[in-house]
Length: 154
Image (cartoon, rainbow, N blue to C red; front, top):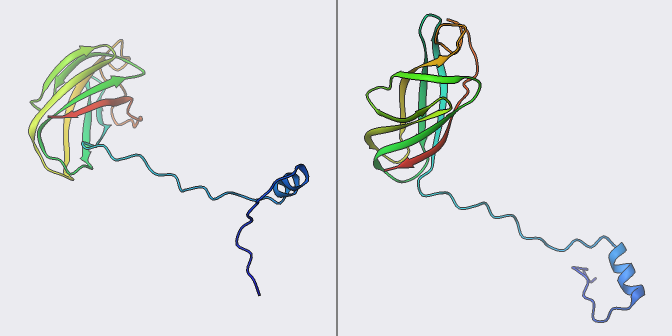
C-alpha cells in the first residue's frame, strides 16, 4: 500500500490546474518567527497610590527589567492624558526635567541588575482640579492616566 504524501505536478493544463486548486491544497507555511527581544527591555507602569483631595496625588512608578543587562540609571519619559500637570512636588530624590502640562522626564540614578524590579513614588498636582490639586478624590480608585513612553537604560 502506497501512502499519498503531497501532489507533485509535472505538467499543468487548465483542467489540471482547476482540479488542483479545488482540492484545497494548503502549502506548508513556516511558523511566524517572533521579533527579537530588545537588548534593554523594561516594562514601566504607573499606578495611583493615593489622592489627597486638598493638595496632590501620589503615583507609584514600577519598573521590571526583562533583559540581561545591568546599568547605573534609567531615563524615563512620561505622557499624561485627561488632566493638565501643574507640578511634581516630590520625586523620591530623582531628577525631574521637561515638565509640561502633558508630560515630564525623570532620571532615576541607581544601579540595577538583570531581572530587577524598581519602584518609587512621585507626588503630582494638576491644574484646574476640582479636588484642589489632586487628580481624584481621597480614597477614590481611578485608572492611572500617566504612561511611560520611553525608557532608556544608562
